[in-house]
Length: 390
Length: 93
Image 1 (cartoon, each protein chain N blue to C red):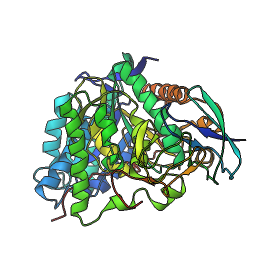
Image 2: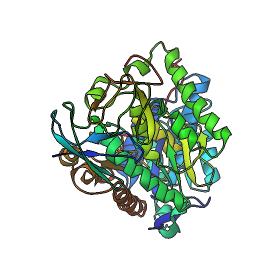
Image 3: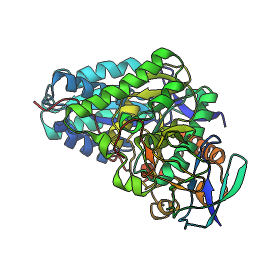
Image 4: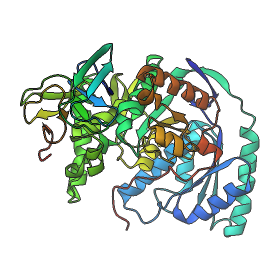
């Protein structure tokens, strides 16, 4: 299990998918994006409520996210839609960055095209040209060292820290041992686990950065006048058997395994090529977290969920794993993998980690997740905001 | 007999996999360790049982890491929960 079948891109990255992306740059082109994607073969729309009337720092955040998403190795080609001009986040500016990857990119501006119907025709024609190019591409066998994958958890319960998170951690260790990389995120879930993460850092600089990144995020929350630390663990966490914030956070952090912490990256930033775990600065909000991870170039994500979760990123296959036998039952059409035998029978954490690895390789090679099959394109894309609307 | 899981070898608490009543026996397993102890308390599913004696002020270890400090002496077989653990990060629990 050290290879997968992927699409080799002009820039050397490898896609686990070859998507035709219809990217809306602003809320006001969402309608067009949805109409175009609905009308043509195999297109994925990405829509969001931002891109207009944001502070400069926030518009840069939106821009970085949209560029990173379109540059993701899983994208074969892109049609970028715009309704007018929003300096700092125009379709032209996004396209300029994305075209550096060598993939086909087209721009459609609603106003310049003569309105909604004319822009629909133009966008569909552009999508057709790109689709006929990129559908010629074929998967090739590549080493698993080409994999950058995301680790996330949500709707967690007691079983998460005991089974699915440590099993995912073991899977991450196996992939990193073969030269791959993983991204740990969700800073709010790591308060109390800094010591353990920093002890795995490859050098003091990375250790300091882990402490600082988590502390800065905590301070940002405190600056809003709210102290979430006092409510963590929550009442249901405590009833479920958790006691301190350290215990809760360590259970969450276990999904990063034991491999070295190689570095810390910003939201939507691509980690360097050295194998290991990278901490990305994202909030605990599941959809925001996986949006940052995908915009950083992750080709696949494993989502550990005791309670069962519907989340799925539009262009980054999202494998959902549960260790809770009840969730595996009542969310059977949503969970991709059930590792509840860790608690129910004699499945070891290591064996469960190998089960996750097998699923990762199969999905990376083209097997579709349940959410992909159900066309759940809008349960996992949310751009984090740092400022207010203007 | 009820079951409990030892997550990391050096942990001094284990996680019970069923509701346990005071006086019931618990089989602790994980990492080649297999031992049986008597429960001194009622312990809910997924809560922790002390696998070793923990003196007041000493670390409570789960996942191989410190999850808090013992607020009181904890005997083997006791329920380990918010009444006898204190966070080292924030007070109040």
